Structure formats: structure tokens, C-alpha cells
Length: 123
Length: 123
DNA sequence: GTGCAAGTTGAACTTATGTTGAGGTCAAGC
DNA sequence: GCTTGACCTCAACATAAGTTCAACTTGCAC
Image (cartoon, rainbow over the protein chains, first blue to last red):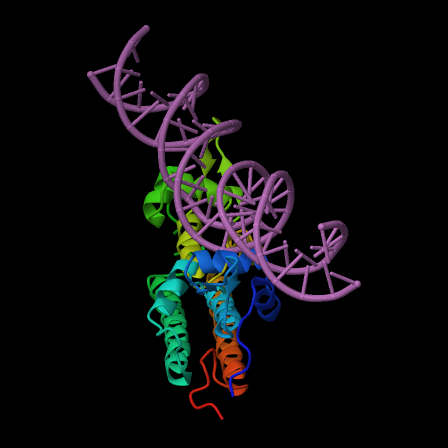
């Protein structure tokens, strides 16, 4: 069975290893979504902390919060394993594209002479 | 022979495809270095625009200006082709490490159940 | 019903990465 | 010798990604 899934800001923060302020920030920017309880408090499910962890990984490889939120936006409300598998693949793919771009650009620059270097032997 | 190498902020900006303000910014943060002429103006050599181009690529894969400056700091003043080859390799290596980290972290997360997804079939 | 931890909002503050503008200098061309 | 363009510095602004603070509410325990 699915366990209790009614997490507070603090729960998600602890689970994701970030500050509660960051959790609110991510909600505001669409990385995670929350419903509200009677008293106006945010209610998250298990996916929230997970999304945040994934977002943090994505940031490390150069994606912005906006880009991450856009990727996550295409995700159905309660995405399953399949959809998350595709999301993971998309992130890895984007990171690979950037790495490939780094590689080819560096190679192109080197092709036209010594990268940034002074010519070793002038003649 | 080495050509004339006494470039102004504007020269470097044009060559690197950035605004002059960005060139000053990068100098301030140690990504590039400059000497000064009699009138206090910055004097760059050819490597400056190149360093900036490389820095821009590095930023795309998640390195900060500070990290880039630190990497570039290890470079001898007039680094040659060899040294720049190592720099390029270091950048690619760092990017690869981050990608690998993304991959393994995602894999680990998936190993412990459905990534962020709701359990497809609850039992 | 009092106390307390944890929640809420909004505004201000911080750091990173730059851009923009004001006020001033300097060399070149007319 | 005056204008023009490119440079200088310094300060303010802008956006991203958060944190911190003040003032207030909620919900649980006693």
C-alpha cells in the first residue's frame, strides 16, 4: 500500500536535505507543487523531496531552476516509474548534449591553432 | 612569429563575443588578466578572448566563474598548447564527473523503488 | 486556555553574474 | 583647440537562487 503522504514543508525539507525556505522557493517556481490544508498550510506528497533532489543534481550540470521547472511541468500530476524514467533520461540527455558541445567547441578551437596558448615555436 | 598582442577591452570583447563590461568583470574575477598601459588602460593578449570563450562553455556545464578562475589560475602566464590541452581535458573531465554523478545518483534513487513516481501497482 | 513548535506571508538581505549610466581622461582627427 | 570615440572608475540596477526576519496563525500537548 502507499503510505501516508501528507508532508509538510519541514518534512520535505528534511527529506530533501534543504532548508524549508528552499522548499517554498521551489514551489513558487514550479519545481514542486503543493495543495493546501484547511489552515492554508502546504501539503506535499513523497515526490516533492525526490523532485528537489533531482533538481539539485540537474543544477550541478548547468540547468537553471526555470529549465528544470519546465521539464517537470511536462510530467503528469502523479507520474509513474515510466514517466520518471523518461525524465531521468531527458536530464542525462541534456547533460550529454552540453558535454558534447563543450568537447566539440574545444576541439574546433584547438583545430584552428593552439587553443589559447602562445605558439610554442614561432617561425 | 607571434603577432601584435596589445588588445584593448573592446578588442577582446569583440573577439570573444561579449560586452566590454563582461571583459572587465572577468578580469576582476581572475578569469583573465591584464597589464596596464601608461594611461591606466587594460592591455590584454590573445589568450584573453580565448579564455572567455572557454569560460562560457564551462559555465554551460555548470561551473561557476569562481571555479573557472581557479582552474585558470593554475595556468602559467603564457601557457602553451600543451598546458591548454591539459586545461581542456580538465574541463571535460570535470563535466564528465558531474554527468557521471547525475547518472549514478539517478540510478541509486531508482534502485530504491520508483524514482519520484507513485507506485504503479500498490499491494 | 496556555504554551510551544512549526506553519504562513511579505520584505529585506545575500551572492553570483553581469549591464547601465554618470562623470572623467586621453589620443586622434579636423 | 574642439569634438569624438574608446577607455577609466564607481555606483546603481537587474535577474537568479536562496536565506533571514518580523508579524501572525495553527494545531498539538498539557
